[in-house]
Length: 486
Image (tube, rainbow, N blue to C red; front, side, top):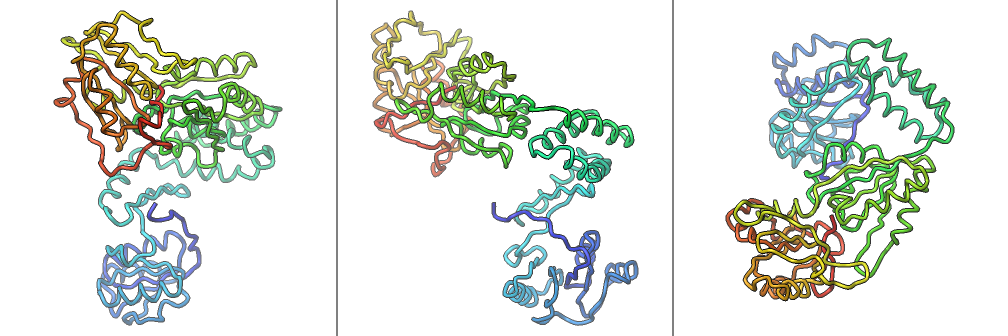
């Protein structure tokens, strides 16, 4: 974040606006809406500021002079719209020295704060800022939000404000209040207010409040959510909604930090990642934590890379919840095979090259790898190996021993779907050497298929060479960092 977003209370405080034209009038109007007293400092007023002064004689005052350092004293905020370079520089320097927030219109270098594009549903406000880099884009985004937020949202927020103290008294625990408001805003009570039936909406809110207050030691819930292969844009809408509801987040090592950051800001975050031969938190302990947290009334988000039911051990975690009667729901995710293959331009199936696809694990529980038990293998199918980077030489050798041709196409996709994505294409005979030369690490996925030949023509996504690793603990092949789990 280049700027810290904040809403200032300017009620009954003096704000200084430099300039007498339309820009100055527009900025002064915004300050007046926020309850401020405005001083217009300019040698002469123009029609827009004259009209503003006439409309608000008790709150807008004119000082007929050009700005000189010291005039900002006593102001809660200063805004320059005079379009005079010398004055702009002087007011920025003076306000910075005094610690007074200052904004010079269309000159980000002279601004200590940015005036955002605003969607006003008072008391609900939505502010959009590009940090001064693209104000037109910010206004376009505001226009889209305007169509999504009915004007009656202001009534809903005002009603919630009137009930706030009553809710605080009835539901002393923060988690209880949070659940109450989520039920209200996601349900028919809010819908009634937004439809103009405010009395009905208030009645519904009171009933929900009574129901919540009557509950003793409510049971929590577990959300088993697939986080996808790395790109936050691949999350489902349902996943995002549940991430905003969770009180606690348990996340894997192979969930990109950018995805964890999308969870509710005040949610507790617990890393439970596992690497090869190093289980930071044993699976049995994860199962117990999930159940204990939910039994205590928490809504627990179990965030897993890819899809929780494809090499994600999601089924094992749910079995522990079933034993203790803990409610849960599962949100599937884009698994690593789908995401990495699509971003690498490698179809998993193709009428001419691959009529079937198999997802295989390249790392067995006991450390033993014998892929011949999954045979026979066919040239006209796609094999996708999860967690197999450290065993890549053995995978390639065993496929060759099983009769696959030495020139059969294969690829490794590292950090797929993220800006740090890299793809190495080769043959079964040369893949290990190519991956070692490229110093690929984890997480990565191995694809063995004739469709790998299509990658040069179907590739559409290109990572940035200087992109930082999207996943923590990024390593190299020799360090035996395991590939991404589904």
